[in-house]
Length: 352
Image 1 (cartoon, one colour):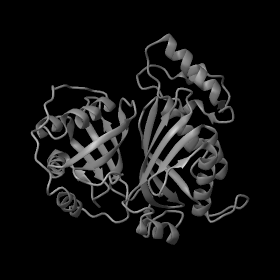
Image 2 (cartoon, helix red, strand yellow; image 1 turned 135 degrees about the vertical axis):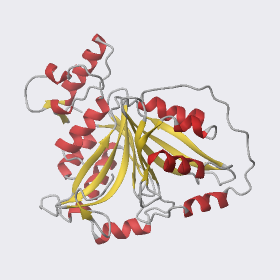
Image 3 (cartoon, helix red, strand yellow; image 1 turned 120 degrees about the vertical axis):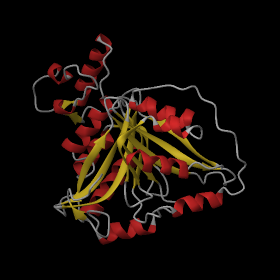
Image 4 (spheres, helix red, strand yellow; image 1 turned 90 degrees about the horizontal axis):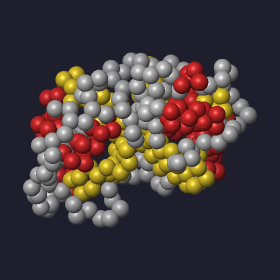
């Protein structure tokens, strides 16, 4: 961990208190161990919550270029626990262990740039679109870029251990083939013999923190009363589900989407949550009644709320049932820097 660095500008406070960057010596970069010490001392002295996981990832991605340079990839690996599990859902199996993660990231970067370690290859950027303000874990929505173009999008969830090392990662890129409403028909066919069950009972609550809202919606209200779920969505909600080409806009479209995916035999079972306040990221799997063990589809969701505790943005991304996904693999071979067949001009998409 001592060789990883983070800059004061990336230390994020989730409340309106002054940044603890002022507590760190005024050098342009500060060893991560020193910053972790500042976090520990500050949190012991007050009840304020600082977004440590978010700050670490912002530094690794934006400063160290951990997903776009081989040197940065090594910095990422040095920030990991020895037994880290990196679950890239593009790959058939998780990558386990610090050394394996280092080699995996290096190979992935070289494949995008078309260069060897000592060569300058194609520009292969990695842009953070949104990142949750978690302390023990966080997640971020991202896009691959190259010069004036942007391409593949996805979401990554990162969790720290008690030593503030990265212990778990799940990353899922968007599917290049988006089935739209066909996915509903497929899931309904797979659960056609499911036995209808009464709606679950719940005690109505009004959480305001992003991670608590997500837990309430998925762990308590799911499958119960759509009206209860919808009161947490703002009228201006933008909902990006990567089963679809277009985003959903407004509560009416989101309500229909939620109702379409509410039928006997399907459960979105949550797995890991971050502790974000204004935005949150969490992992889940789709469990189908009667499906063979181990056949659940994994996913990641990102939720952002406004100052009133209303959800204003969602991004859902499911994994592919085939790994690597055939179209995704071809896209990376055809345009490795951007990972898609038809990239677009940076900033030209109407929604992230």
